[in-house]
Image 1: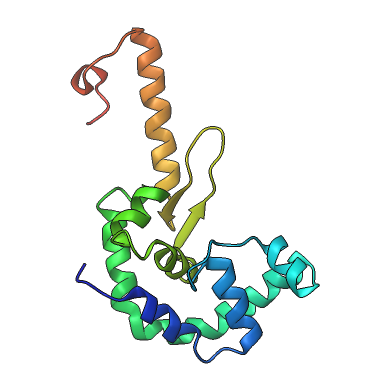
Image 2: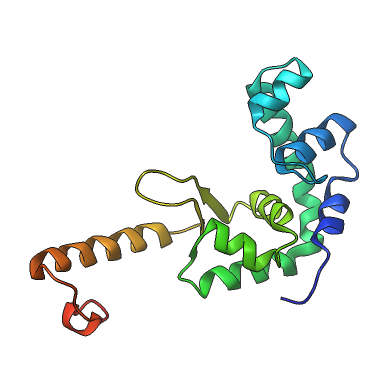
Length: 167
């Protein structure tokens, strides 16, 4: 992806929002240089509930989504990037590669705006990752289940050819 200033793009997207919505998004995604803050942290500072902060965020997103169309080529590039990895990518690697080490927070924000991208938070079984809408996650789960089953059957490390799962 050619060099873009994702910070300017994000600032353009939120520029027409009311101040409170700008502040919530800036703090929620760390767009003004700080760390990303939780709904709870932002709510406490405003004296409102985290649910109200979430509502403000969602209202801001709905206002921004029309303006996002001006940047559709960026989102198409994000989609092509994910498709190169089977529609799924570990979050830290995705943000590092797309954000060119300096715009990780902005990439996170942009991905959050488009419903074709879904974030899966980290769990005991896996790291946080992003996936395209569709059955990409289910396909990955099935592949892992097959691999685990084959490894149990043989009880030792094997080449992919011996596992016979690439066909």
